[in-house]
Image (cartoon, rainbow, N blue to C red; front, side, top):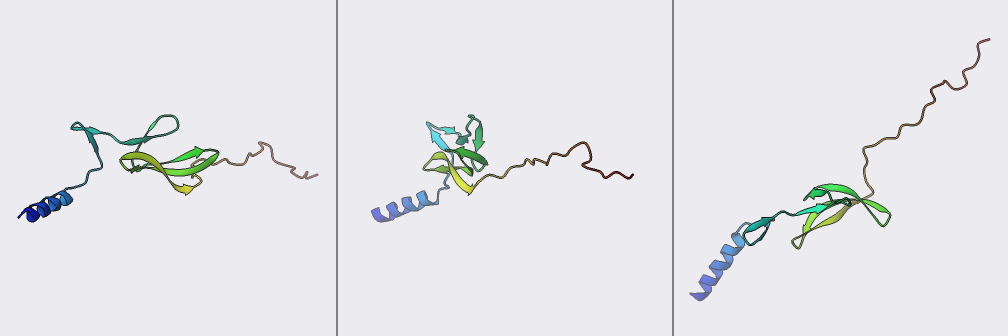
Length: 97
Protein backbone atom coordinates (compact mmCIF):
# COMPACT_ATOMS: atom_id res chain seq x y z
CA UNK A 1 0.00 0.00 0.00
CA UNK A 2 2.79 2.40 0.92
CA UNK A 3 4.55 1.80 -2.43
CA UNK A 4 1.32 2.43 -4.35
CA UNK A 5 0.77 5.77 -2.59
CA UNK A 6 4.38 6.77 -3.19
CA UNK A 7 4.17 5.88 -6.89
CA UNK A 8 0.89 7.79 -7.20
CA UNK A 9 2.46 10.91 -5.69
CA UNK A 10 5.46 10.65 -8.03
CA UNK A 11 3.19 10.30 -11.07
CA UNK A 12 1.12 13.33 -10.02
CA UNK A 13 4.28 15.38 -9.50
CA UNK A 14 5.64 14.42 -12.93
CA UNK A 15 2.33 15.13 -14.65
CA UNK A 16 2.10 18.68 -13.24
CA UNK A 17 2.87 21.36 -15.82
CA UNK A 18 6.31 22.89 -15.56
CA UNK A 19 6.25 26.68 -15.46
CA UNK A 20 9.07 29.00 -16.55
CA UNK A 21 7.86 31.65 -14.10
CA UNK A 22 9.84 32.04 -10.92
CA UNK A 23 7.82 32.54 -7.75
CA UNK A 24 8.91 33.76 -4.37
CA UNK A 25 6.50 33.97 -1.49
CA UNK A 26 3.54 33.42 -3.83
CA UNK A 27 4.64 36.33 -6.03
CA UNK A 28 5.73 35.88 -9.66
CA UNK A 29 9.17 37.27 -10.44
CA UNK A 30 9.62 38.47 -14.03
CA UNK A 31 12.71 37.07 -15.75
CA UNK A 32 14.54 39.07 -18.43
CA UNK A 33 18.04 39.98 -19.59
CA UNK A 34 19.62 43.42 -19.79
CA UNK A 35 21.69 44.95 -22.56
CA UNK A 36 24.92 46.91 -22.04
CA UNK A 37 23.00 50.13 -21.34
CA UNK A 38 20.69 48.46 -18.80
CA UNK A 39 17.71 48.14 -21.16
CA UNK A 40 15.29 45.27 -20.65
CA UNK A 41 15.45 42.41 -23.17
CA UNK A 42 12.70 39.77 -22.97
CA UNK A 43 13.38 36.02 -22.94
CA UNK A 44 13.78 34.70 -26.48
CA UNK A 45 14.90 38.04 -27.98
CA UNK A 46 18.25 38.26 -29.78
CA UNK A 47 20.62 41.23 -29.91
CA UNK A 48 24.16 42.01 -31.03
CA UNK A 49 26.66 41.96 -28.15
CA UNK A 50 30.22 43.25 -28.09
CA UNK A 51 32.43 41.58 -25.47
CA UNK A 52 36.23 41.94 -25.31
CA UNK A 53 36.30 43.45 -28.82
CA UNK A 54 34.33 40.55 -30.32
CA UNK A 55 30.83 41.02 -31.77
CA UNK A 56 28.26 38.22 -31.86
CA UNK A 57 24.52 37.61 -31.88
CA UNK A 58 23.14 36.33 -28.57
CA UNK A 59 19.71 35.25 -27.35
CA UNK A 60 18.26 35.86 -23.88
CA UNK A 61 17.61 32.41 -22.37
CA UNK A 62 17.10 30.76 -18.99
CA UNK A 63 19.75 28.48 -17.47
CA UNK A 64 19.22 26.98 -14.01
CA UNK A 65 16.52 29.59 -13.27
CA UNK A 66 18.86 32.45 -14.18
CA UNK A 67 18.46 34.63 -17.27
CA UNK A 68 21.64 34.56 -19.37
CA UNK A 69 22.99 35.35 -22.83
CA UNK A 70 23.74 32.44 -25.17
CA UNK A 71 25.72 33.03 -28.39
CA UNK A 72 23.67 31.97 -31.42
CA UNK A 73 25.98 33.07 -34.24
CA UNK A 74 29.31 34.75 -34.84
CA UNK A 75 29.10 38.35 -35.96
CA UNK A 76 26.01 40.50 -36.15
CA UNK A 77 23.53 41.33 -38.86
CA UNK A 78 22.99 45.03 -39.34
CA UNK A 79 20.22 46.95 -41.03
CA UNK A 80 22.37 49.87 -42.10
CA UNK A 81 23.92 50.38 -45.50
CA UNK A 82 26.63 52.88 -46.28
CA UNK A 83 26.11 53.94 -49.89
CA UNK A 84 29.24 54.98 -51.78
CA UNK A 85 29.79 58.72 -51.88
CA UNK A 86 28.83 60.25 -55.21
CA UNK A 87 30.28 63.50 -56.48
CA UNK A 88 27.65 66.14 -57.26
CA UNK A 89 29.58 66.94 -60.44
CA UNK A 90 30.03 64.56 -63.39
CA UNK A 91 33.53 63.18 -63.56
CA UNK A 92 35.65 64.08 -66.61
CA UNK A 93 33.02 64.62 -69.32
CA UNK A 94 34.89 64.80 -72.61
CA UNK A 95 34.52 68.08 -74.40
CA UNK A 96 32.62 68.10 -77.69
CA UNK A 97 34.69 70.69 -79.42
